[in-house]
Length: 366
Image 1: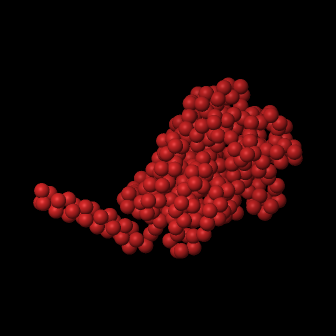
Image 2: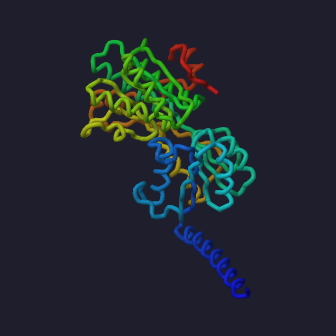
Image 3: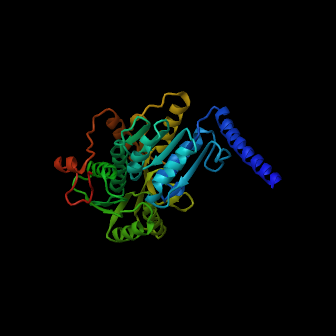
C-alpha cells in the first residue's frame, strides 16, 4: 500500500511539474497563449471563425495547414450550443491562458457575465462594442463600407452584362445591427448604379444551416435574381453551392462571399468560380492586433473600430471574371469612401429615411 501511495504522489508531482514546464515553454517563446472559443460552426466555416483562426496561427508564424504549436501556445474550442459558452469561457480562464478570444455577438452576454469574475484575465470579442469591462478588448467593423464595394461590383458587372433591370438578393444569418450594416452597405452600393433596383432579403435565423440558404438561392435565381450576397456564416455556403450548380449549367448568376475570400469555395471548373467577389471582413487583423497588444504589454480594454482605412474591411478581386473596368470603378469608390466623400448609412432606419434603401426589408437595427 505504501508503494502504491508513493507512486501516486510521484505521478501527481510529475504531472504538475510537466504542466508548469509546458507553461514555461510557452512563456520562453516570448509569445502569449490564447484560446479561441467559437460557436457551433467552428473554424471550418470558411467565413468569420476561419478568419479569426487564420490570424491567430499567422501570429505564431504558422499556417492553417501546419499548426505545430497548437495545443501548446494556442488552441480552439467549438461550442456546440450556446449553453456551453459560459462553461467554456470559465474553463479557459481557469486554465490560465494569457488571452481568451470569442467570435460574434452571440457570446456577448456570456462574456459579460464571466469577465468580471476573472478581472486579471484578458478577453477579446469581435463584432461587439457593449460588453464594457476593463479586461475586454472589443472589435467592431465598418461592414457597411466593404459591403458597399461588393454591392457596387455586382451592379457594375450586371451593367457590363447588359442587364437592364437586374434583381439582387441578400441572405442574413441572425438579424441584428451588425448584419444590418452588411445589408445596408450592399443595398447602397447597388443603388449607386441602379437607383430603382429591386432588392429582396431573407434571414435564416441560423449561422450553420446552408440548406436554408441553398433553397432560398435556388428560388431567387429561378425568379431572375442576378447576384446574392450572404452574410450568414456557414449558412451562406448554401448560396455558393447553388450558384456553382447553376453557373456550371451556363446560367449567369453570382454568389458574393463574406468575411473571408470565398473565391476558391465557388470553383466549379478550372479557375471558374461562382463567387464574383467577397466582402472581406479582416477578422484576422483583429486577432493579430490584440495578440500583439498582449505581447508588448499595451492591451487595454475598450472598443477598437476597424474600417477600410486601416484594412479592416475590403473586397476580393480574385475572380478573373470580375471585369477590370469594374475593379477600376470600385477602387475609385473605395478611395472616395476613405476620403469621406461617400456617406454610408449603417442602420435601416437611417437608410430608409434617406431614400437609400427600399421599404419592406427584414433588417433589424437592434
